[in-house]
Amino acid sequence: MRPRALGVSLLITLMIAGFLFFVIRQIGIYQVELSIRDAHRMPIIPLLFFQGFILFVLGSGQTAAGMTAEADEGVIDYQRLTPMTPMAKVVGYLFGLPIREYITFLATMPFTLWAFWRGEVPLHIGLQLYGVFMIAGVLYHLTGLVAGTVLKNRRWAFLSSMGLVFALYTVVPQASKLGLVYFKYVTIEPVVRECLPYLVESRMGAAAQTMENIAPAAQFFNLNFPQSVFTAGTLLFLIGAMAVMLWRRWHRAESHLMGKAGATGLFAWIQLMLLGNALPLIEPSGRVFPSHGARYFQL
Figure 1 (cartoon, rainbow, N blue to C red):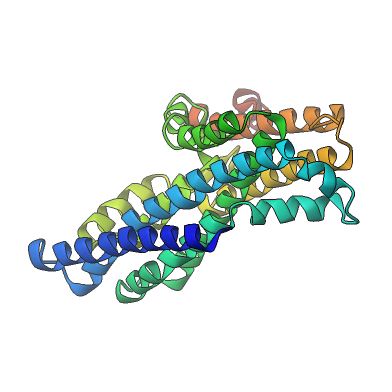
Figure 2 (cartoon, one colour):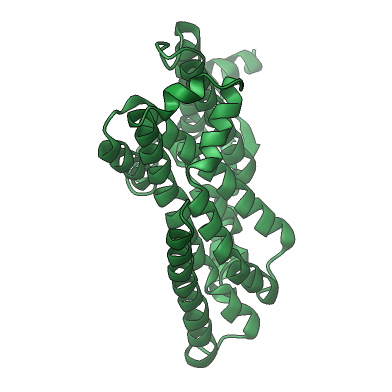
């Protein structure tokens, strides 16, 4: 990480984050004539989008491109000879390659913390939102590591990892309208919707709360989970799966990313999740065989 490049990145990041915070807040106070609390809530969502672009898109691309560059320069072969465990090497690359993006992301946090404080956002809402945000960032960076490990072309690894993150927030939400609800839990969208009443001004917050009351929980068969819990569980499971893939490749260079048992288990788990989320859309009770269950109960 070059200090000059980091300084330029920090300068640009602070300029954009400061512009978003101060301009949107001033518009809320003087043009929309909101209260101080509501005016300080207005920049939160734009700042969240900007932070997501830094950590999700740029961070994933940097991780994939850096991994490919390390392989091209022979550094990966050298790292295999070092007396470190494969998982330690995975963790080192996971947090080392996108370090500039982590630093620039942290540089935007004072604006968010100030908006949370003056906007009177509850502490548990902030922890819930940014806890899942960071977990999602780790997953997307692991995706970049996997792409950089598999693809040999640095440019394609960079573009494919960023394209995947972009597709998650543009194409995948459309798939949820077709019954593939589970895929939206690979994003932070459900958590943002759950926290939205506390992140916007009062009138919009009341409307968001009404929408949230209509579908307040993540439905899995006949069970209801908080959106943040189900999303975090989904992301953590995928983090574990990708960590195993990278561990296998670091353990033996010629290994496949997944073995037969692991691939079968991952496929079965995804199918179970898809069924568990889609079934309540078909049968409100969430039972796999609702007609047989009802008939048996009547008997």
